[in-house]
Image 1 (cartoon, rainbow, N blue to C red):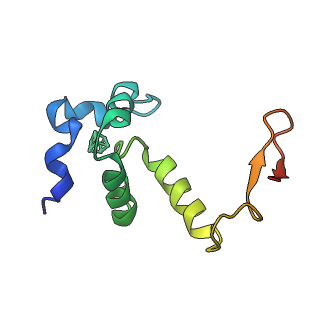
Image 2: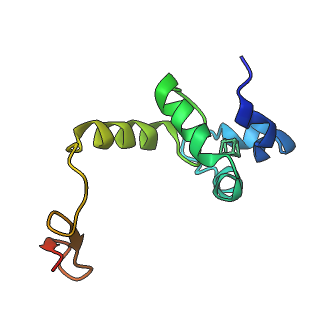
Length: 99
Ligand code: SF4
């Protein structure tokens, strides 16, 4: 099934092998193209929805997608407001309330 966004996919103009790196490789070329791709978000959403088990999609590899999906499913449904927002201190790497 072809999805609407696929017509604008930058990877359609490149060597598909770059999106399937060998074990231990980081797919730097593919990730760089994904970063500039205008359909990165719908590509990533579809990969997450399909539990795509291999390759780089939306700039993320399979393990990164699994982690993102886990984080999103564990995130509370409450909206982020100034009262609930936190930020990480770059020095201590601990959370502190935004005031
Ligand atoms: S984000 Fe990457 S994998 Fe997805 S369509 Fe764009 S270039 Fe292809």
